[in-house]
Length: 153
Length: 200
Image (cartoon, rainbow over all chains, first blue to last red; front, side):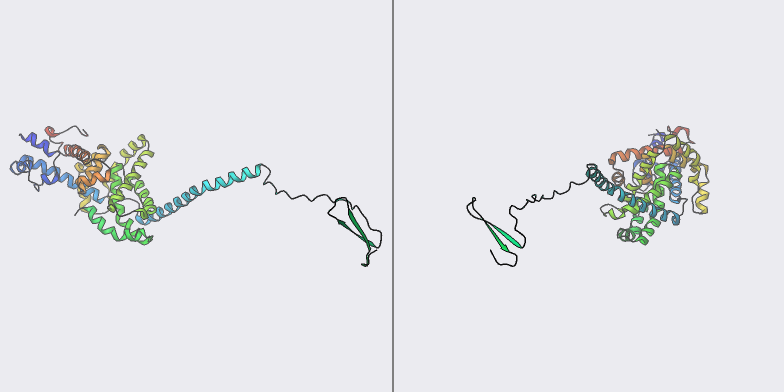
């Protein structure tokens, strides 16, 4: 293999292989070829710098500001979710109310009608009372007039 | 030990308490994880402002969803899924034109870390690295950026990244090789015989 071929492998190799921490044909070549070693070192240096850079990046907003904002927003979303979950129930209650009252309200319970009062068939004279007895025979009715003080006539 | 393994161990006690509704533990959890969330969001979106928005959205979702974390996967894996979903939703909201404008305008902001670490700043002032970062964030496809960051820069095993991204491990390796080739070709661009078509 030419150095050009080895350098193609350098482009995809595991960093451990480039550092010589893994035994491989590429690793062995790197120990014997100073030109490829330079390329491998350049690759490793670039990756190390990228690693250091990404390890150093920080959000610009300080945590003292970001944390309370996040907690407030989380609480707001919980309230919103609570309303969202309660909404179907409220809507169902509202629809039921509309349906109920759009027909003139609840139907009143019917009150049992009293039979009309019949005028008395027999009236006692003044100072007297009357008792009417119904017998077993529908053709015979006993009418008893008596004085209001309790003595019969 | 990888960065994320360290982070998992560091946040484990905060996670347990935050799940029980301890607001102080949640604050400590956010303190520990926020930079990592921002880094993932930056790699995913390729834009610092978008990454800021996604990070904030993740904190909101984390506050609402920490009780649903069941310890069946590593916390960072679960957190990555939340970040990824938030990033994808954010991406859908933006029009393509807006994204391009933002990228062009803000790509230099990535080179301004919040820490005043002189050594880091000196390292970042190199034009070569600036070009590398711009290339990484703006030219590589999103999936390749994510895979390269998680495997080569954050030392995750490809099989674990496959689980995090819901991909076949073979697909992860294919993305990884393409990303390496594209980035390294950029690095070695001073050697014309090595230059590959950028982004191929």
